[in-house]
Amino acid sequence: MSVEVSTPILEARNVTKVFGSGVVNKSETIALEDFSLRVDAEHPSITAIVGESGSGKTTLVRLLLGLTPPTAGEVSYRGKPIGSLSKREKQEYLRDIQAIFQDPFEVYNPFYKVDHILELPIKYFKLAKNKAEAKKLMESSLSAVGLRPDETLGRYPHQLSGGQRQRIMVARSLIMRPKVIVADEPVSMVDASLRATILDSLMTLNRDFGISLIYITHDLTTAYQISKDVIVLYRGTVAEVGNVERVVPQPEHPYTKLLVGSIPVPDPDAPWLGEKGLGEPVKGLEPAGVSYCRFHQRCPWAMPVCVEQTPPLFQTAADRATSCFLYRESPAIESTQLNDVMVGSETAVAGR
Image (tube, rainbow, N blue to C red; front, top):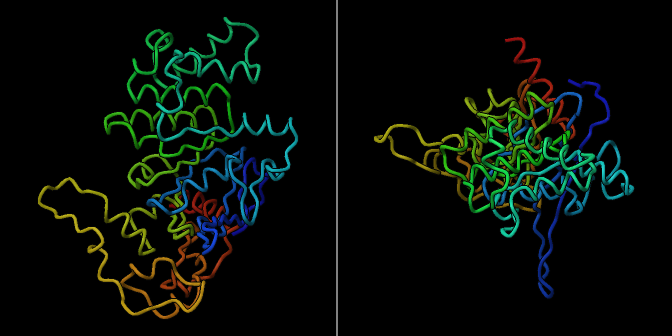
């Protein structure tokens, strides 16, 4: 299914990032391989990128924010590679594409009151004509994420809780009125009781202000709470993609099944099986070259073809695709068609 869309505000197209190491014995690590994602400013969305440590999530964040260049493919802003943006276009990009990081405390200077971190973008982007207007803008942004300005402004970072500090970062992003926010593990370092509050603040940005979210996480539970679509990464490759309401309850890829099976259940008598819950992996399959399924060593369904070539994405339904030879009877698609699958999820859900 192909849908005509306007020029995306942010797009990663066939992006690969390879890191090299060593001087004498050079080696390469593929951190992200042939990844594509398109964000359309006219249709605000929430897309979760899920995977364990080493899956390529942090590399993807750095690529989308222009902090590191891709080895192959390109990341573009409004149709233009971010590496070739003019000074004016770069400033627009920095305003339209905002980030919220994992550890809010590291962002703050302990010698400044929290007002400082809100005042900086207002000053840099000339968002207010005077101090009174700047203060009004800060207060409205804080209120939008559930913070009381009179209890927040004028205080130092250590005088606030982790949840408050993270919501201030959400408010800081909101001040910019961006088109896209890349949220990198935004609730992983706060108490479970505060996660719902921060997730609600993020969903408010999408619902009330039309901001698209790219939600990066290792936690499939929060991904299910906040997102419409989910992309599951494993060792730099896309394992599964689709509507979160289909993928989480009925995972197709063995790795996604492992992630879902790792979610604790509220039953003290139910043992946590970990990897054993997936089944015993097939032994004796060794890759003959550089093309193979990255998950084959942990997979109970591995077969010879899994170590002979990299599985493409097979579109198993209008709203989902899976990179696994178990579904090779379904049509194969290119990584650039991931967004067509996610657009298809809207049609599929509407028809239910």
